Length: 265
Length: 344
Image (cartoon, rainbow over all chains, first blue to last red):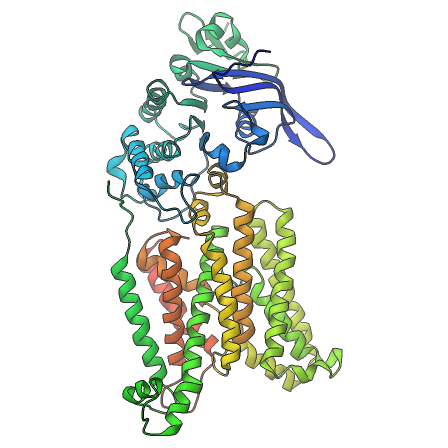
């Protein structure tokens, strides 16, 4: 295997799952990924197929069963939490615990891996925080309390927090799960813009399959039998999407580049 | 570029002035009326009208007020730490079983006399004996909670484990109480009422030293505590060592609560309520603001409670524990009903 400098994420022979004292339950194995910087990737698959487990393994929340993950050419195992926090930021699905944090304070927390022991914000930190507000057009919300935000606003603010962390990679776990169509599309186009304009590598696990097919540069398709990754067009041409849902109800239409309901016989 | 995080400088200045005023009021009140001017004169070693006044101020009221300040801020900081760590508004020094552990230590010392022979009973009247018993009890229960905490990942489970240890210790105390004599029981009851007076300067300096050690642990976790406001997963993703933060919090809390309970008895309510009062006053979750705010408010409220417990110009002194809850609980209820929402 040739070692390519340009791969921001490289995964070889990865097995993911859970290990307890008595037995190992493998959720997926033989995962291989080579991803270049500045791409927006959508991770697609049915519920329960292991999308979250894969993201958790890539972000070092849980250990891999076997295989290697390289983030920015560094082995994930050798990166400390703080080093990883400078390469990769997260936007999670889980609800934020109640607090009276303001939007500014929330976004500023993204600077945590870079600030001193008491969390003092230097003028450089302030510039990065303000840039994050600009990019997500949330500057007007700065003094609002987080609990006053709508779901759509909160999602943008959480993305701003990830941007304040200023990492080359941003991983989002179902970022549009609670959003209506308008906010879903605006979130996706914001993310797409961050990838193409600011060279961020964006990894999104999502159920917005049709949107992903239109916008994603690359797809990671996960089904119970197989994992494939590659540019969206290539996967469509290789008929890789046909087996994604493994169901008679859904059909992939190559001409529409969309999933449609199968017509009953 | 402006930093829109409020500094609350004026609120802090007002709080410190209030603290100073309440401190003076606290010292001037008591069974004997002493004019404010005479109090000043006692402090600067001037000519006090009556020698007994100077003695009352310097040897009794001043150390008691200092104790109140340490106890109030220590318990309130512990409460704030617990509420952030467990992300639960009901958390306080009592829930981790720390206070119950201290009570258990003192109960064994005082009530266990009948079981363990008269040898230890002779130590039970000295405040140092009680302090050591309470600290070891608090430490023992907290170690048990920490061992359990190392095995479970979920902070909610730790909270429940702490509560279980709490009920375990209180049932042991009930069993001990059932078998002990009336005098022993009375002595234990007096300890459990809580008391801020009767501490010598030596004991106060011991209290203060441990207080400072506890606070220095807290200073190092201010930043990770703020990150923990987003939940453990976000904190981890930002490079926070969650386990270390958790351990530091537990150590700081047990030191503060353990030593305070040891010297002044299990004082209820302050640890739970003061953080809420402060959060309503400051409406922020930022620990850089909240920690000093909670420390000052805790001191103020403890001094007020102590002043009321004195029953000024009477011979009686009420148990401090009764006052903290009697006056504090309605205030919290009123604030909650008025403001509707409370954050942790």
